[in-house]
Figure 1 (tube, rainbow, N blue to C red):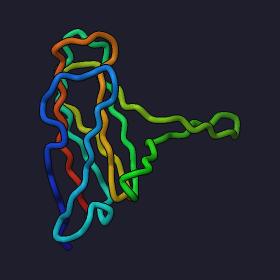
Figure 2: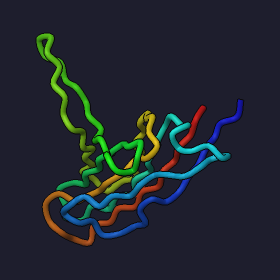
Figure 3: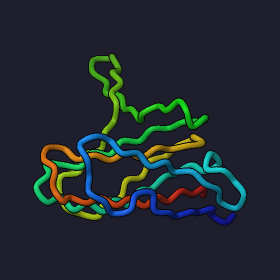
Figure 4: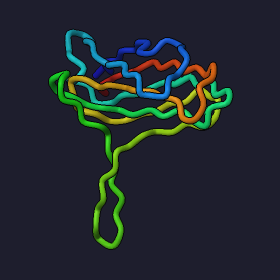
Length: 130
């Protein structure tokens, strides 16, 4: 069985802001909507300058209206606590963020933390089904 695969730029290299700016990963691969896929990989090129960090969050939707932010659970003494997940990057680097998903739309949002500078961030998405 061959892999279905798509790569596209979802954020051209641009200066970051102090609030989340979203890009939506959508599209078709071999006439199959993104919801047929099961893996999202983001290639994130981050130039820090004097920022504290870059924050990335992922939101998922099946209707392009109602989005649900990626969460994680921590367990302590048999109690699970859910938290909203924000991925934080603290150094100039080329990062890879991979996550499984089952959604029609995925919104990838980026913002800076601390001081506005000439810090840059570019994001390319890759989606596939194996």
